[in-house]
Length: 229
Image (cartoon, rainbow, N blue to C red; front, side, top):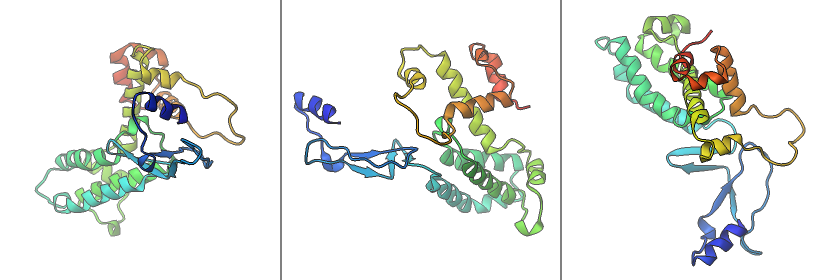
C-alpha cells in the first residue's frame, strides 16, 4: 500500500486514509497496514462492493434475510390458488433467488450455506404448494408437486460451471484467467486447508461426468452442466 500511495503521489493524487479500508478473507490473522509511519488503515469485517457484500468468513446472513423479507412480501402470491404452480416457481427464482445468489458463480458454498439456501427455497415452495409445516409433508413431495426437483444449490453449481467453462476458454493473458492460474508464494498454514473454489468445481464436474477437455466443446459442456448422475 505504501508503494501504491507513492505512485499516487507522483501523479499528484492523495490517498484518503479515513476512507480507505482493507479486508482479510478466509483467515483469522490480523495485521496492520501502514501508509506512512503514522497512518494506519482500518481493518473491517465486511465490505460492500458493486452491490455485493464481501465478508471475512462464514455465511453472509444479510442475503438470506433479504430473501426472507421478499418471500414475506409476496405471501399473498404464494398462497393464491388461482396462480399456477409453475408461475410461482418462476417468480421465486426471479425475485428471491437472484438476490441471495448474486455473484455465486465464484463462491465456495459451505454445508451451512447450502442448508440455508435450500431452507429458503423450500420456504416459498411450501407456501406455493399451500402446505403448512404442521401438515408434515416431506420436502421431496412438495418439490414433486411444484415440479421443482432441481434445487437452488444445483443451480448455483451450474452457474459456477458455466463461468468455469468461460474462464478456461478465454485468452490466457486476460486477468480472470491469470488470477485463476496464480498460486500464492510461500508455505500454507498447518492443518486442514479450506475447500477451494476449484475443488468445488471439480466435485460438481465429477457429479456430472464432465472432464476439463469438454470445455472446448460448448454444446457438450452446456448439456453436461445441466445433468447430474
